[in-house]
Each structure stands twice: as C-alpha cells, then as structure tokens.
Amino acid sequence: MQRDLVERARQGDHDAFAELAGAAISRLDSAAWLILRDSEQAKDAVQNALVRAWRDLPTLRDPDRFDAWLHRLVVRACIDEARRLRRHRVDVELTEIHAPADAGVESTIADRDQIERGFLRLEPEQRAVIVLHHYLDLPMPMVAATLGIPLGTAKSRLHYALARMRTALDADAQIRPDLAEGRPS
Amino acid sequence: MTTDDRFARNLSAWLVEDGAHRVPDHLAEVLVQSAATHQRRWWSSPERWLPVDTTFRPRLFSPPPIARLVLIAVVVIALAGLLLFTVGSRQPRLPAPFGPARNGIMLSSADGDIFAIDPATAKRTAILSGSLFEFGPLFSRDGTRFSFLREGPKDCGRSDCGLILVIANADGSDVHEVTPALSALDGVDWSPDGTQVAILAAAPSGTGHVIDIVQADGSGMRTIDIGRPVHEPSWLPPDGREIIFRGEEMVAGDPPPGIFAVRPDGTGLRQISTRPAVDANDYQGVAVSPDGQYVTYQDTNFDANPPNGLFQVHVLSLRTGEDRILPQPKGAAAMAGVFSPDGSKIAYLRIGSDGLLQMVVAPVDGTGLGIAIGPQARFGSEGPTINNYLWSPDGTAVIANYDVEKVARLLPIDGSPATVLVHGELALPAYQRLAP
Image 1 (cartoon, rainbow over the protein chains, first blue to last red):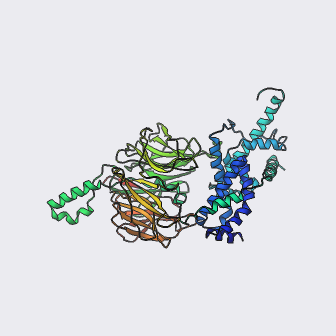
Image 2: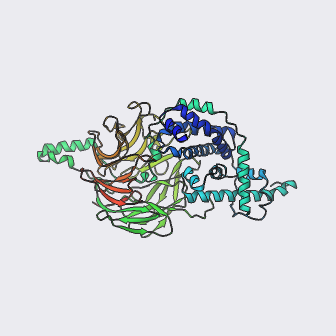
C-alpha cells in the first residue's frame, strides 16, 4: 500500500504524498521534538523535511526505502535547525566523558526528570541516534543507514551518547546535595 | 536484568512518554507549501550523489591563452604552410608541474589499504596496509609524494573521531601525519609547489566546511574562515597565488552560492562568478584549468526543460569574464567537467535525453559536441553510476569508475575500445604524473 503511494507521489501525485505525510507527521513530529526539545524548531524541521521530501521524491530510486529516507531528511533538518539555534545559545558542556559508572546509577535511572536533563546535555547528533534506536526502534544497521554513517560509527555514537547521559546523571546526583545545602554547583 | 538493560528500558519509556504528547497541527501548512513546490527531475541534484572522491579528481592541467595561441598559429602558418595540418595538435608547454606528462603508477584504496597499480598490467601491490583504515590517495602535482586519509583513533571519546591527513613518498616510505584528527575532512588539493595542501574541515559554526591550509612537512596548519560554508577548493595554477572555491548556501540565511577566490593567507577574497545564482544548487562542480585561465562549473538551465531544468557545463574565463556553455544534443544534460592536461579539452558526464549516462570529451572552446567515450550506464539507487573520473597525465585517456560493475575503465579519447584497469571495490585511482 505504502509502496503504491510512494510510486504515485514520485510521479507527481500530490494527494498520494498528502496521505504519506499525514501518516508520518505525528511520528516525525515526536522524533523532531525529542531531538530538538523546542516545539517551533521541531515544527520547522518537520516542515522543511516534508517539503524537501516532496521536491526530491523523484530522485528516490527505491520506494521501499521511503521511511528510512524520510527519517534521514527529518534528522538532518533537525541537526540543521539545532546548529542554527546553537549560534545564539550557550550550551552546557561537560568537559570530560567517563566510562559508564555502575555505582549510583541504579538509584537515579528511575528519575525521569534526571533522564531528561541528561538527554538535554547531548549533542543533537547524539540525541538523533538515541531517538532512532530507542524511540523509533530501528535496528542499528538501519540507524546507520538513516544517518548515512558506517555501522561502527553509529554504534560508537550511541555508546558515547549513553555514556554521556550516565555521566550527567552521576554529576546531577552529586550536585543535588550541594544545592540542597544552598551551595552553588 | 543488568543496569544497562534497566537504563535502556527507562530511557525508551521516557522517550515514548515525552514524545506522545505531540499533536502536529501543521500538516495543512506543509501540504500548501509542498503543493507550491516543483518536484525535481529524477536525475537532478548531482552533488548529493557524487561520492566524496569526486573532490579528489585531479585538476592539475591547463589550456593555453586562446587568443595568443591563435596569433602564434597564424604566424606559424604564414611562415610555413607545411604546419597547417599539424598546428591543431600542437600542445603548448605549460610550466611544470602542469601540462601533459608521462604516465606513472596509479594508486587506489580498498578495505582501508592503499595499493599501487601498474596501468600496463593492472597488477596490484599493497604499499600501505595494516590495522589502520586508510583511503583516498592523491598524488602531489610532481608525482613524488601522495596524501591520503586515515581514520582517527577510535578511543577519542567522541562520537566522531574524524580523519587525519597523512603524506608519504610515492613508494610508500616516510609516512607522516600532517593534521590532527579533523571532523568532516574532505576536498584535498595539493599546492603547485607541493609545500602545502588545502583541505576542507568542519566549520567552527557547525555548518559546512572551512578551508585549512596544511604544511606538507607537518609543521602546522591554519584556517581560512570567510564566514560562510565553502566547498571544492582548488589552487589556482600555475603559481597557487589564490585558492578557488565554491561558496555554499547550506541553510536559510546563507548568501547565495558562487565561485570565489582567496589568497592562501586568507586575504583578498573576491567573487569570480559573474551572474547571480539561479538556485542553491548553482555553481557546482568547480574545477580550474591547468594554466589558471578558466574555471568550469555546472548550473541548471530551467528554460530548457521547465520546471526542472537541465544541467549544463560552463567554461568561465578568469581573464575576460566570458562565460561559455558547452553545447549539448537536444534534451541532453552535462555534469562535472574536468580539464585535460593540455587544457584544450574537457571531460564531463553527459545524461542523454533517454536518461543514459556516458563520458564525453569535448573542445573547451565550445566548437563541437565532443565525442562520447566508453560504455553507457544507467542511474543507480544513489544517482549516477559513472563517477570519479580523471585524465591520464599524458592526456590520451580518461579513467572513470563504473559503480555498478565495480570497475575503473581506461577510456582512450581517440575512440578506441575501453579497457578495464581495476576490478573490485576500489576508490578513484590517483594517477602519478612523471616529468615529460
């Protein structure tokens, strides 16, 4: 069914494209929000990606790759948006990345606020690989194909993203007692 | 259940929960925008299709100043009518390391190793192999050394450990790294005197590339950041006094694309392209002639085939600003020209009205449609399947990669049959230029 719609859209059938976009936009919007954490930016990214998808659909040679291709367009649009945003914002930087620490993590992983804070400290490229794998449930070879990077790079990007989140969670766990005592972190 | 499993499960749960509250309300807006947007033709947007190695295609050689050549030819003809039939094949001498030269060995890479290939026998010999992943060899213009890219250390602590530019002697000796690991390293081009290499690396802004000038002896590097993304850098022959590049329009707000020149010290930025860009894809495929008098690029002629247009190859005179379009058969498009060693011809990829691809060699002065050489090919899932072409140093043939068959073919420009030089998953071969 989807293949037929993609074929028709490639031939210039805008109604077919509308159907494809309607089926995908909720998923894409959620993914973009998770990567960007900014509603307007996410909306812009999805909008740019879908308009570009329509424009470039005739260049998509394999209709069965439509979903992966669309994910790729959205992720790239998100990263472009994030880079534009980065020019006007000072990011929180962690100066060092340590290996995952076992101690103290188990007590914090249940705290979703902390997960969010850890997630926010990731680069958009790192958030993208996490969203593709842990939210859209794509296997790593598909994540690599979607991002246009080698499988090894995708795996190492995921590894370091998770390691960085855990480091942030540990740092949070250490900072919070300080805050409770009224000391600056 | 391990801590890792629990962490991943909680992370997935949080992602699902956090993403679930999105209610997209902009589908109608998207559809209004898309309905007002023309779809591209299926073969358009070449830059996305051409592999990175395309930027490695040598741009080492050049044509003579046409007016001077004609004047000399007239004098010669007047003095000796005997030369009437030979003046067309006369090749003006260009200062070393430009102009036609003897063919040396070829270098290529496969599976992270660098190979030397004897063009006569196609015999392959590994000259750099081992645990390091190395690829993208490119000879210096005098053929005595070559550069290549090496994968950065995997334990760098970042998601992208980048690539390192490495230089070695032509026989594989004296291998030394000349840059640290750099993100998005691309577009390597040797200076005419071989003391420096221009490369592209990730811009500090995070969008696109800047040009880095790297000392070939490894003594340092400096960045030329002109404040906008750049691509396709080439040293301007014969003395490398400037670097020619494409200014890119990558995101909304960037200035439109164009061709520019800047001195290697970062001063003297000037625009070379003479007309406003027609779209963000304009001015792609920039290459410089071996005498530094011409630049070739491609754009899209929207009038020829509305609304999607046809690619066409231009030759722009740096002296006069004259911008010439190479003629094509009706309905055909042309992409990514490369000048011959003597600068009189240009090799490019033609897309026929039937959609088939074929290499073409045509006169730079636009006086003919040129001759098609080598077999035809179809488009693949990623775009053109003929990629990464270069001239042999003696100017008698073009070497092109045929991706579907995984071969590199030698295509004689006299129309004689093509021969397969290299089989397998090899990247663009680099061809050594030996002194004439």
